[in-house]
Image 1 (tube, rainbow, N blue to C red):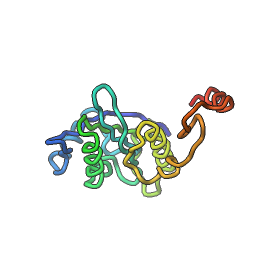
Image 2: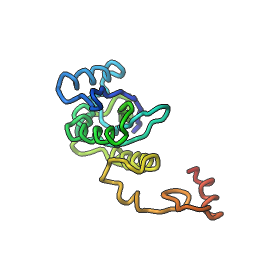
Image 3: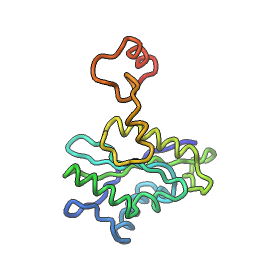
Length: 177
């Protein structure tokens, strides 16, 4: 399985709120996505919601679309509410969505959602959450984050203040993290 990354697709705002509450607005957003990459809205994989402020961007939510397509999963009322809470917390910025689209092995076509699940999609979501938490401790995700927030592995995850041991420094070099 191979994934391709697409985005960031800007979510339109009005008075500080994401304005994809009605079907016409959602359709216009997906038309832009489809124009950029035909078939992407019907694909499965993982997605990352982020906010760009100035020259930087931070992740605020990581999700997966394995049983449903991106189109059906990432702009639900529940998700829009989460995105709006992040925008309110930040106070300004440009909301963006990125898609990690899963492809078939044979012809590199987009994979379709499956009721039997794609185990690799769930794994990628956990991996992306771990990276997102390193960039933003206020990540909105609740599931899959408790362990990552509590675990301390010097030099790798949630390193305590102070200098690292020589072994931890060597392991960072060895493992490349």
